[in-house]
Length: 90
Image (cartoon, rainbow, N blue to C red):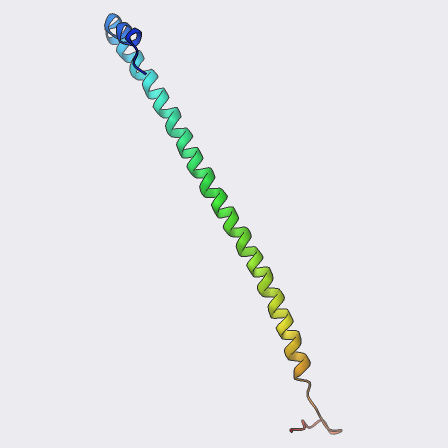
C-alpha cells in the first residue's frame, strides 16, 4: 500500500501530498467498509428470507394437518338423534 514512490511523493509534495495520501487511503478504507457492510447485509437478508420460507412451509404443513384432523374428528362425531331431534347416547 505504501510504496517508496508514494512516500517520495508525500515528502516532496508536503501538505498537498499528505492531503492526497489521506484522501486516497480514506477512499480505499471507505470502499472496503462499504463492501464488507454490503456483504454482511446481503447475508443477513438471505438468512431472513430462508427463515421466512421455512416458516411458511411449516405453516402450510400445520394447516394441512389441522384440516386433516378436523375432518377426521367431524367424521367420528356424527350425532345420533331420534325422530324428535333428541340426541341418543350409548
